[in-house]
Length: 396
Image 1: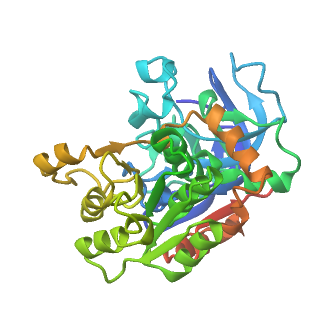
Image 2: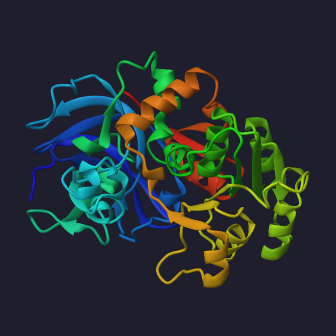
């Protein structure tokens, strides 16, 4: 059992509805690990539902901060005090990692959603906690963490080196670093699904199902790549309006539509009916919902030789059925992906540059909250009124 000796605070998820901000002690960083003093943490839907299902645990997998201390064998390119963004852990050794696809690392699950490192213990003042692990003296005060390689819902994160992206050459201010906190997951996932998976040309068309942070990032990426047709689909009018302001050329409120009606609404749009040679639907569709009926609607809506990109799922046992003769006839593909097949060392600089150029107006998605207001941030995101809450940590 490690020694816990660095005081900080962390938001601990005991159940989906029971999050608590508590004083904790972090263990020292080990080999290829760092302590990151967290400045800002994005809240993602993955945190809201605790993908991985381990309780109690410290979550958080989007973050910005500065290097506080380094463990042995950390790269000299990462210096004490450097600004960093946090993304996801990967093994760096499997066939996916060594060929440039770390998001699909063969150890992706145990290193991210199923991580349960014994990185923190409750401060002595907190006593013991129900469901926590035992410390060296047999007291239940050790908290599981290491979510996505770091658990950024902590004032000081114990971070695996490969989940840390140094950004000192791009950061101009602390305020800017706060704005960039969510880049390492949700924003990256939506944008890179367009850039890396669809790889569209300006003449291609795209539809985006679901306009949370991931979906709106896909909209912004399509706009940044100068696509002429960008179709936004959601059930909330405020999100459709926001998508339009970010570059969507068409919007569809699907709240009262059946899957077949949604397909008809998409394929009836002018870009697909204007000429006899017009495609029958978008050349690419990004689905951020993971709802099987919507995925099947996407497969029915996309043009021949088009591609549907799946960015979410509804858990074990969820599936879609494919009519094989039509699937073969239409040449349609369904591609699942994690993090948009991003390599954060490459994707994060791209996203920062887009922000500099006005192509990624993150401020339109984000709302900042003091960390002690985490419950309000969570509820406002869950209710749909806020796209991307960002928790701001004190820097005392």
